[in-house]
Length: 306
Image (tube, rainbow, N blue to C red):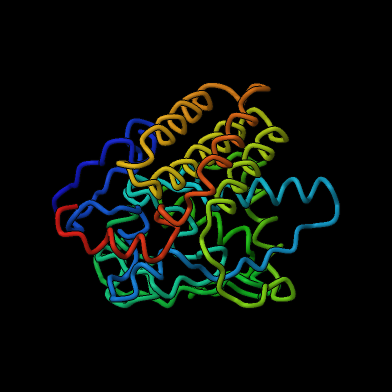
C-alpha cells in the first residue's frame, strides 16, 4: 500500500497533517470521508447526507456538559490512535451521528460495505489476528440499555468502550473526564429522540454548530481534557474547509486556517467567536457552490483533472 500526500490545507494542516491518507485509495479525496465510503454512483449523495442523530441531552446540567464533551470527542480523531487516526477517522467514521454507517468501506478494515473487522492488524497491534473477518457495524442508539456489548458479550459498556479505544484502535488512555463524557454521550443516544425523516443533509450550519459546541465543551472541561476538545474543534473546522472549493473560496479557507491556528495553543479569545460566526455567515449565501451541495460535489467528483 502506498501513502498518499495530504493535499495543501485539506484539514488546516492539523497537527502537521494529522489526516495523512495512509492507504492507496486512488486520487486524493475531495472529502476525507471518501477514504472510508463505498464508491458507488451515489457517492455524492452519501457524502452530503447522513442518518439523523438520536441524541437526548441529559436534563441534569453536569451530565449534559459531560455528554457534550463526549459528543465532540466521538467526532474527533483525537480519541483514537494508530493508522485510523492518521487517516482522519473518528468513532463517527463507522457510526455516523451514532448510527450505523451502511456505506463504510475501507480495504484495510472490511470486504463488505457496512461492516468492519474489529480484530484488524492494520488498526491494532493488540487485537490484530491477520484474518479479514468483518462484522456488521451496529447502530449505537439505545446502546446504554443493552445487557451486553460486542461479539464477546461484555456486560459493562464502560469496559467495552475502553477496549475499543485503547485496544481496537490503539488510542491513548483518555482522561477520566473525557471517558466519562464519551459514556454519557453514548447513553444519551435514544430511539425516542430519533428525528423524522431519519436522513438529514450535511450542512454548513450544522458543522459550524458542531465547532461551537466543541468549544463550549472545552470551556467546561478540565486541564487534561481541554486540549483534546480544542483539537476536536479544529478537526471540525477542517471538515468545513474541505467542502469549500479552493478556487472560489481561497480567502475563506485562509481565514479558517488562521482561526484554527489560534486554537492550537489556547482556548478562543473574546474576538474568536464573532470572527468565526461572521465567516460562516459570509459563506452561507454561497453554500450551493460548495461540496455541501450534492450536485456541486458530484460534478467535482466526476472531473477527470481533479
